Every structure is written in structure tokens, then in C-alpha cells.
Amino acid sequence: MDLFENPDKSIKKNALGKSKIEYIQSASILTEGKGFMDAYDFTLNPYTGCTFGCNYCYAAFFSRSEEEKNTWGYWLKVKENALALLIKKRRKPLIDKTIYLSSVTDPYQPIEKELELTRKLLKELIDYHRVRLVIQTRSPLVTRDIDLFLQFDTVQVNMTITTDSEEVRKAFEPLCPSNKTRLKAIKEVNDSGVNSCITMTPLLPIQDANSFIESLLETGVKKFVVQPFHPDKGKFVASTREEAVKLTNKFNWDEKKYKEIVGLFKNKLPFIGEGKSGFAPI
Image (cartoon, rainbow, N blue to C red; front, side, top):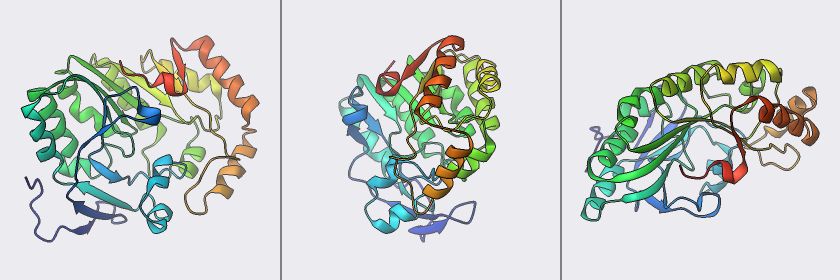
């Protein structure tokens, strides 16, 4: 099934005019949950690569080539047969299976607004399967599909918000939506009645912890997840380590500071999970 009408669509530019977009035929769409995701039956990734291009993203280091790793954020592969692959599962419906959407890409990155590939997959899951779904994103576009989330028996939307500082966000996540727009989006999702979670993973340098906590509480979200960020140990795309280290030094961000902030979170937020256990299926 060809979802996208464009005879010369093998490679093109996205709306930002920066990223190379390639359309591919994927061998599969559901991957058995393993490693960090082993609590899930499957992960589902409509895309390979991610044009949000966070410079610390672990997924970059699964790239097939050194060039792809070093140009992370500026290329994307669209699995144009993703829906056709999921349709084949109708023969043996996915009943009570846990699915994580997505583990190595963002299902709501910019091109999704145009292609609606994730939306098509959600509709297929609603019409022919009965799954327990967790959606992971850092995009306000997720609010577009609230109407579909409300049709699932079991669903949770996770919004990644890693810092309260736009300076930090621009250094580590230069192609991502602002912190403010993400907070607004997850508030809208939560207000609609959809289970919601804010994932501060990894937790980057925080400018004003108390003010950040207030902004988190204002979303109405009751569940939070946190993971540490290790600038001295972490991997960075291309030559971004220097800027990362500079900012962590500016904000005195170290293991002691992280534990101090997490302590405040535990005192003031309704529920906070840490690490892998925080991402457990609902």
C-alpha cells in the first residue's frame, strides 16, 4: 500500500528545508520489546531517524553509518508501507498487547503533520486491535490526535520536557519545540481526560527548580518520570559535547545537584518514577 502520492518521492526536503527525507519499504513495523523496552510486547516506529535531532539522543548511535550519526536530525526515513504491515496483523489481532510508540524516533515530528502516518496507524489499532498503548513524544502536534486517544481502552501520552531553561533547550535540543509549547500541549491532552505523563528524561540543567515545579503542576499531570544526564559519560552527536559541558558547568549540574532537584520533585510532585521502572506499561 502506497500512502504517499509522489512519483519522485525517494528523497525530498521537509517543511523546514533542512532535512533529507527518504521513503523506504520496511521489513517490519512491530519490534519485540527488548533491553530498556523489555516490559513491552512491541515497539512501533513509523520513522527511522528524527528531525528533532536532540544532540544527546541514544537513537543516533544506532544509525547505520557514521555519516548518519554525525548528521542526526537532518535526515529521516519514512516507512511508507507501515500501515500495510500493520494491516497484515488483522489476521491475528493484537489483543491486550503492550505497545510503545515510539522507541527510536518521534511519532509526531514535523513531517507527521503532512503525512499523518502515525494517525493512520492509530486508527488501524483502534479499528482492528485492542492494545495497551504508550505514546512518547516531545511535539505539541500530539494534541491533534486526542480524538483517537479517547477511543482506546488503555492509553497514556508521555511528553518529554527535559529542562526549564530555553538556553539549555536550544543547546541540547535546537530543532525541538519550546518548553512552553510542550507544557501547554500536555496540559491539553490531560485536560481532555487522556492519561498523561511528563518524562524528564534525561533531566538537563535546571535554572529555577521551584518555578519549574509550579509549571509542571499547572499542567494537571499526576505522573512524572526522571532519569539522570551524565555529560562526562554521555555520547553526543558530532561536536556538541563542548557546549553541553559548558552549560552543565554554568548551572553547576552534577550528580549532587541532580539528586537535590529530584528530592524536590519527590516532595512536591504527585508521583515520580525513576529510570526504566518509570516507563513500565500502564
